[in-house]
Length: 217
Image (cartoon, rainbow, N blue to C red; front, side, top):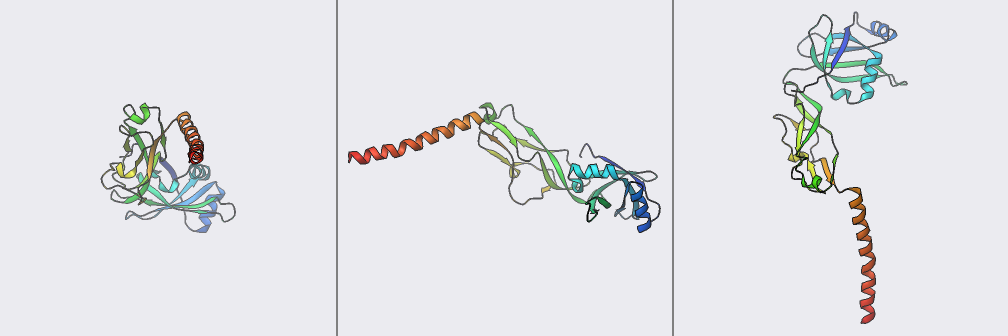
């Protein structure tokens, strides 16, 4: 299971309809609703500044939250919609869905690297570049992994590690169908520049040799 599921504190909203929603906004709140899970929908308010900060951090709709509302049991939720002001582009309403253990959701899972100590590419001065420090997977809410692991113990300079080489948790699969790159080991910048120079020199020498050969004939 994922070790750190962030808490999301909200207040139960008294009253429904446009009037209650406008009142919440005037009080610095963003009205919302929590639905699903064979339980009645729960109207909530979330502090505007807190919600805006989380939205700016990114991936709000693909983050699993532990919602805490006073007087109610904690529940795991995921955002399903954020309505915004048509001109100001600021949040005006947010919808959350309660999750069952068997619910399938999309989440970004961190990538952990092993085998760096024995990697031949790194031993020869290669540089490990994480193309995707997180990968988006379809997982079940009751079995969310802390991370996925890539092994670079046999990776050479110029080689890449793709999603097809990663052992994913049972029941998880990537949201992208193609075999995308997660990490790669590239040559050090100095070595790469030297190789480029050698190629340029070689390219310059070939025509001259050919011209000399042609002159001899």
